[in-house]
Image 1 (cartoon, chains in turn blue, cyan):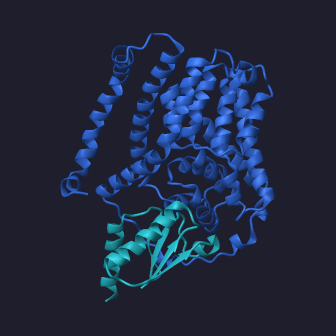
Image 2 (spheres, rainbow over the protein chains, first blue to last red):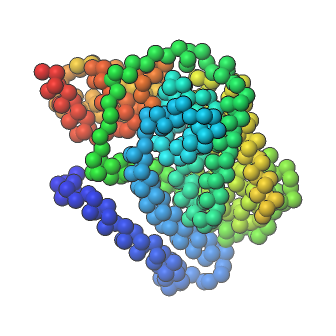
Image 3 (tube, rainbow over the protein chains, first blue to last red):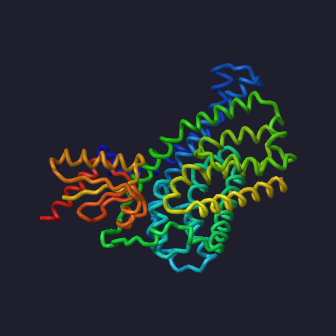
Length: 342
Length: 83
């Protein structure tokens, strides 16, 4: 990295914000000009609608994603699994579940760290249920999902997703704790002796934090942008071509079995939020009920077969089944409640 | 110098290992680089975020993958204190 950028990192980061804002606000106008003036597409045809949707949504979502991933990347430098663990030690059960769920959102987490993190929490004596609240919240309530929901559906839906996700994480973790399932954790987990003398405190400068933000950008956006484009392309196709109310029969409110079915299909599926949300948006536009769609999304993003296979190393099958089952039921309840309200 | 790369085998830990080897070569340093993949063994170091880099028993990196240049800095500074 050249010297100028190194020395002026903070200034550059701050200056990018108004540029971002200018781009974001001009998207509508730019898309309009591109589609109707430059490309001269006939208004109101299936193809034009699909193309307009695609051209508008892709840059919008990518811009939002870039901003939020960067900001959250920086926020996350203030949190660490060690600090989270220290904060959770000794907390009474329900409060522990609430704190663990909220910390799960901001503590940096990647699925390959799930096991080291689990082991670290167990070793510190954090109750099993509280640990699970963390493990449920962390993958489900991630910034990509929040950005996509905000960008494609608006802030109310994003807020809804976060709140219901938190409620599920808190309650499922609490229930798992109450069921006293500790005996279904593999024995070797409780026998680990850790040598803590090697640990060092990490001191991060402002420049370091910005670097981490950029790392997060490269990591997340770099991985996810293809899925977003594919997802939005599919969404655009559905938006332009599929007749209204097409999904109403299968995923609509009247089909009561659609909620459990969506959750059951969603649980073993593995997709990142970027892949699934644009498609869900298209389905919603064609008559799928909000609760069913939300339940499906949470089941796909929050639980997955690969995750359960990884957890098999530390948990016995009964506990994994209980984990998936309790979270699944929580998600189904959310689905029904929202179908009822909306 | 004894170097251990901690990670179960995902992209990040493979990249960390590759970059560490590259950094060693660039500095003309020799060291044994050991990859620790079993969760039970990784846990004994007490890290909660893989990947991890351990130099002579001290955890110098955990939870992210530094650039080759950063790793070279870390390697250099650890040999200085050894003297």
